[in-house]
Image (cartoon, rainbow, N blue to C red):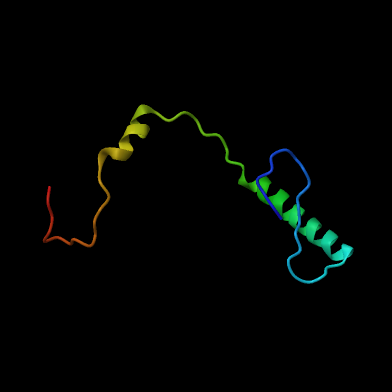
Length: 76
């Protein structure tokens, strides 16, 4: 099955091994479509309010800790 199609075209299924029946393909499409619909519903992010200038700039105020250095290699 290929993804990334925003136009709403039906999915393309390529059988690479075996010989599934029409019933088996229909069951596969039903299960995958339902799983995709549930994932799409739960994957939508809620919009949060605007971030303040402090929140935007505070990320770069400190460097990440380098735990492998230990206390003896502490530098300011």
